[in-house]
Length: 155
Image (cartoon, rainbow, N blue to C red):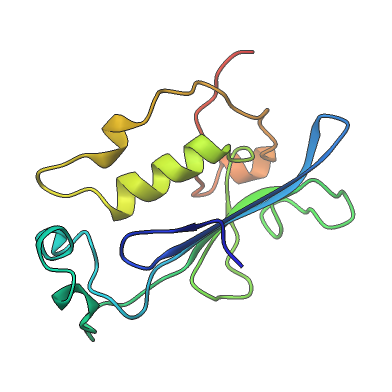
């Protein structure tokens, strides 16, 4: 199940759940393609030779990236289970605090900026700017440890 299939075969999943205009939960995943060369390492291959792009490169280590948000007070605990968090890879207890829920624009911009920029082209420079954000949900204890900060805009 996915929403977007990228040029290199990577998959993007975005699921949001709202209740009366209030965000209840989200799951945003980037699953790199395990079968193709990384676009960021050799973009000219994808742009020039589609057949060669299908060759498997064993040097590439694919790491799934997932942003989760769940404001359920029975689940959330400072540092142990942040309201909004980032998971890298398939590690069960990897929950890196994130200051707020992530908007679709922020997520896609994050993916394109970090996995698809090349030395010659900044693909997210073509994105229209969206200055929207969710309210911060980070616990004070989480501000004192390594964490990710989402952009904040006044509404």
